[in-house]
Each structure stands twice: as structure tokens, then as C-alpha cells.
Length: 530
Image 1 (cartoon, helix red, strand yellow):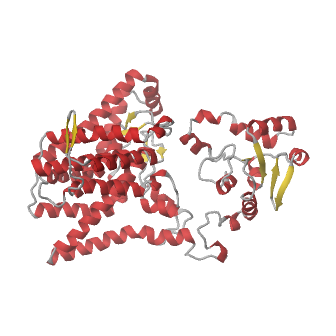
Image 2 (image 1 turned 120 degrees about the vertical axis):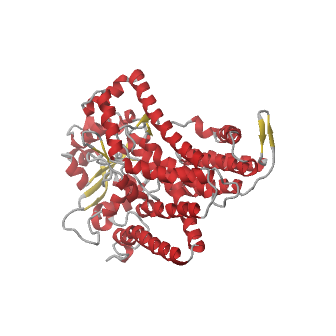
Image 3 (image 1 turned 45 degrees about the vertical axis):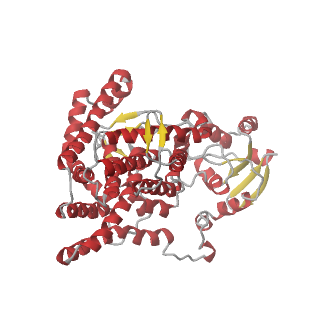
């Protein structure tokens, strides 16, 4: 919070901070940005990344799992290694949905496949009880489904290239309990109430199995963290030694400091175990429990939140920023549905003082949770009003008419041009800037957009000398050098506006001499290469 403090948030871009609630610091106290985006933030931002575009298909996958749980797609498929209790239509529908998620947003395949496969195992448990055969059921469906889904979408995999580079251990970044509750409190409260209700109503539970499984999950994650760390020390010593050197510690000192931090931040882990253990306990006695499917969703969501505290996917970021982002987003979907179900049940089942107390708590919790949408919507939309009626629009570029009016007119003009590569200033300030504004709002390809984001989606080495070449193009007085750069990138349009002039010491004389200006207004000029 910044001074002066106020009840109503009025700082510029304050609502963005909601996607950065989780805070990570290394053992030296250096901050590492963590993304903890959630669905409402995505809609408010209007960011059509794959995790948002895939949401309807995530819900479809959950519906497929629920259909299995409720007994849909009954039938038999004889495989040479076993018999599936599912119809062929159901089998291929599942493969179609899971295969589609793999190319829509590859992260989502994990939770969707787990939910569907374990829903199938849950239906078998309701008929024959829990045993080791349920694990066999999961593999019996999961393996042929995975193979079929791969074959159905094989054109995608032929050219598929992922930035994922394996799994790394997370020693020093446990999630603090305060951050976890700030992020999930509006969902945790009704879920805890639902679990207490199941306990008070004498719902059958296998507490020993739930406790041992929950403890087993924790031990497995800890063991995997240490095993991967030791393997890294043996197989990738340069990588591990680089981390140790950055923290100015040897291996034993690093482990000791990391474990001490985990103990000091134990609230997050205890919260998740307090949800996971009773959920699993009720799930293992779920033959006649109407909560069974919801308990399965809660279990999977809790594991998605717990997992990044011990392991994360290695990618271009080099730490757990993206793993938390994607796993938490999936958990939001599952826990939101589960919490909504629990709230509906509690409101219909509780009576007397318990009902009044629950309703009061629920109003307080929901009220706290709704502070964000209630205040962020007016802030993002300027209170749903504008001094310019023409800007009351879904056009994402309309704000430029006030903030960058000359650039806005240039964009309108360039949207009518024949396609071609344009060049404009690239961002020396990193991401989330106005750089690449012409390419963004016209759709014309540019030589280089935001270098950081470009590096995420493509091999960073592919950028080559583009950053330096753009600077040279604008600053050199030598037309021969400029011409060579234009030819190298097949540039058709050159943009020179305030952004270019404040970024580089632009030598515009050569463009006036050798290129044709096709648009000029105020501070911006567009040149076309003949």
C-alpha cells in the first residue's frame, strides 16, 4: 500500500496487482515475480491467451468426467490387456476432448485427464469398493485414451515444439499461508465448512487411508524434490552450482536455509493438508456419498496448488512463475465449482443457529471477495463513461485516440494498407509497454515486438541481431546500411513517431531522401519502401 492510504483504490493500474498476490523471494531477499492470474482478472484484462481461450473446453472436460461418474456411456470395450466398462462413443469422445486440450493449452491436459480417469475409477469403486484394482482401472483407461488422443491430433504434434525442459526442484520458494489465504480464502472458507458438515453429519470416512495418503503425497513430493536436486548436482553441476553461487551458499547450507524457511512458512502447507486429508478420507468411503465427484475435484485442485511448492516445470523463466500461474488457474476452475456446490448444499441443509451463522459468514466472505470486481470494473472502464461517446466501444485501440492521437490516426490509416512487414521502435523497457503498438493494432508483422515475450514463444536465439539492427536502421546516416537492413527483413513500412524519437537518435533525412512518405500527421510519419 502506498501513501496516502484510502478505502477506495485509486492508484493507476492497482487492479493488476491482484494477479501478483503470491510473492517469492530467494534466500538473499531478491524478489521473483509470480503470476497468480484468476478468471475474473483475465476477463477484466481482456487477455486472450490460451489459458483463457481453453476455459470452455476445460468445462467440457469436467462435464465429460461428471457424465462418467453419473453412469453415462455404459458399455464394454475388450482390449487385449483388459476390459473397459465404457462405450466406444464415450471412449472416442474422451479422446477427442483431451486431444483438443493438448493443443489448445497443453498445461490443461494434466488436470483434465486426471479428473476423467479418476472419475472412471470412482464409478468402479462405487460398484466394487476401493482396492488396488482402482489404480489398474485408471491405467486401463488412461493409456489407450492417451494413445488415441495423440493419433487423432498427430498433425499438431508433427510440428509441436515446447519450451518445457524437464522438472526442477523447488527448495526455497514455499507459498506463505498469508498469501495462500489472500488468494484462495473466498473458496477455502465454504470448503472447510462443507468438510466440517460432512464430519458432523457422520458421513462415512476412512481417516487412516486419508491421513496416510495425504502424508504419502507430501513425502512423495519432498522425495522427488531431493532426488531431482541430487540428480541435477550429478548430471548438471553447472546449473546447480550457479544457483548455489547466486545464494552464496554451499549445498548443505542451501538445504538448511531452505528447510528453515519452509518451517517458518508452514501455514500454507498446513492449510492444504487440512483440506486434502479429510477430503481423501471421505472420498475413500464414497460409495453412497453424493459429494464424491466434488471431493475428487477438491482433491485434484489441492494437489495442483501444493505441487508448485516442491516442483516446477523448467522453461524460459527459470523459476516457478509459469507453473504457479497455470496450475493455480486450473485449481480456480475446480475449486470454484466445488465451492458453489458446497454453498448450495449448506444453504439447503443447515437449520437454526447453524444456518444463520453460516449465512453471516458467507455474506462476509463473499463481500470480501466481491470487493475486487466491484471496484476494478469502474476503474478499468472509467466508471463506464467517457467524454468521447465514440470511445464507448469494445475496440481495444480506442483509448489511443486520447493518449496517442497521432499514432491512433496512423493505425487507422495502416489498417487499410496492403499487407507487409513494418518496423517500429522495439521496447528497451521490457514487456507491458506501448511499444509494438502499430503491429498490435494493425496485425501487420513487425521485425521485433516485445523481446521478452517473443523469447517465451520462440527460441530466444531466433531474434539474432534484430534488436541492434532496428536501432541501426533508425540511427545510421548511411543509406547503404539502412537499405541492407530493409532488404534483410523485407520491410515495407517504416514508422517514425514520438516513441521512435525518444528511443533512438533518429536520422530521418535518409528516409526522406530515399523513401516515400505515405502518411503524416502531427508527430508521426509512415514511409513506404518502393
